[in-house]
Image 1: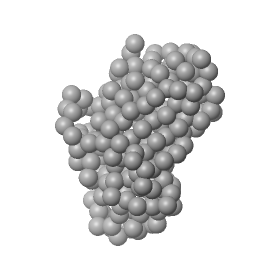
Image 2: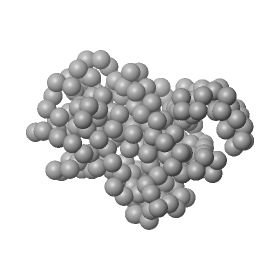
Image 3: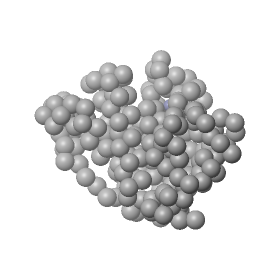
Image 4: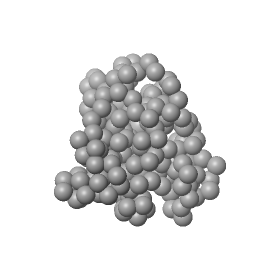
Length: 211
Ligand SMILES: [Zn+2]
């Protein structure tokens, strides 16, 4: 089905360590939404990246750009606040992908299907394009009673040590896909995080996933 059309503009490259530009672009947009343009410029100047104020790209970026931005925001704002920014960035990224990369007919089909089948199709499509958001990390999933998504070497847990899960970007992005395309009641929760010492980051899909 047409779900395969979750495309990246430069789809075709599977070079490790490169991701789509949305992670950085939407993080800056989330800063603007949460703090306003003036404070955002100040924050970006403070972390030494004033150039990101008008960052825009339609080609792949080095995943380390996103990792460094995440770490800089944690240093500047604290983990809780940076996590809030990254969560909003994840939601914005899912909205961008839904509006720009998934054809309307495929969206309608997904919303009409039983949620478990829709989840199966959507996760397959997400998995096929995982390199665009996971970079050199690895994404996989299982569809048991409680569907589970896994990120190995998550970019938002890399080189971090924290008492709380740090991958709000991915949890929010996954949740954005599922609530928009399957069922608005679905929630995604990061149950284990590599930043907290887990072997990998694990996200569970919470909510009624019917047959
Ligand atoms: Zn994590």
